[in-house]
Image 1 (cartoon, rainbow, N blue to C red):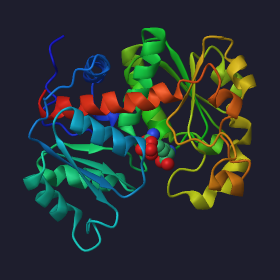
Image 2: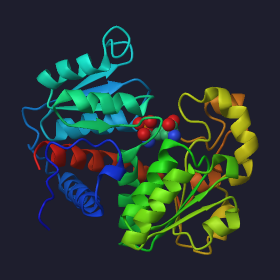
Image 3: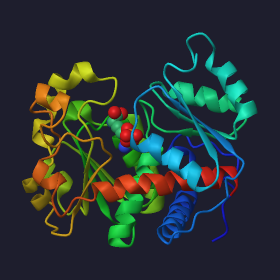
Image 4: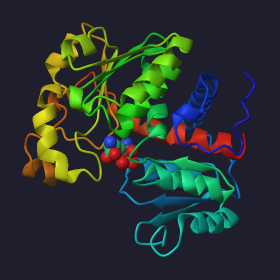
Amino acid sequence: MAAPPLVGRNFLKLLDFTPGEIRYLLDLAARLKADRRSGRRGRSLAGKSIALIFEKPSTRTRCAFTVACVDEGAHPEYLGKGDIQLGKKETVADTARVLGRMFDGIQFRGFAHRTVEELAAHAGVPVWNGLTDAWHPTQILADVLTVREEFGRLDGIALAYAGDGRNNVARSTLVGGAKLGMDVRVVAPASLHPEPELVATVRAIAAETGGKVTVTDSVEEGVHGAHAIYTDVWASMGEEDKIAERIALLKDYKVTRRMMELTGRPEAIFLHCLPAFHNLETDLARQFPEICEVEDEVFEGPQSRVFEEAENRLHTIKAVMVATLVG
Ligand code: CP
Ligand code: NVA
């Protein structure tokens, strides 16, 4: 397949990409993964410098960008919350123009999606969204690569996301699933259903791609026939004051062995973007023992693919950088 022209593009949300462009990124990620596994490292980003701006904490995204840079010969520079003036003492536009003169690409993780759009508008180099309150597009590339590795295809594969249907991961899953012709479902209480405008948008996309979109508060309906059940924390970063309220709303949407059985597919897999609450071995879980969005038995069980999924963050993020910087 001829490479689509992604050089110079930003990667802010999946709505900006065609199904063919997303498939190209997945194929490139699979190739880069195979190369790395066989001990081959590329030099495709040699001599490039990459800025990694983080307003929020991160393990996987930060490490994936860093290791992907080093694998391909680029220099990553971490710019944490307290390190730069972004939006506090210097406008986002000014910071973008400075970084764009020194770096070849900029990753941003933070709160307002508007910030990453502002960076992209002014940097003059590719800007990649490593998570905002609205979207988490690099995550979904890793998720669907994991699903494709498991089932050999994506079209017609049923992916059921259970939990907070309004968060960055749920919203991005809907878009990615619809773009790739999947049978994508969001299973959540009505007050946490994705915004109607977004549902209308993804239904229109699915009508073009042969995909299917379901939004339901019924666990039985939502997970029946699912090849994969996906969940995320019930309170995202910045929503720590909502933990008690979310536990009350979402306790019936916890991923359990019974929910996995309700798929009717013994081969169904469990996905989680991580970090996850699945036991009481974290400070927050000790403080809120009902916070776990997944049973330990499922998280640690034979259907779980969460660490394959986490590794795929590296290969897919590398693909995004290579495709947008050098093609
Ligand atoms: N899934 C994910 O984005 O993980 P981090 O928050 O650790 O980057
Ligand atoms: N929805 C979560 C995803 C973390 C990777 C959050 O925003 O905190």
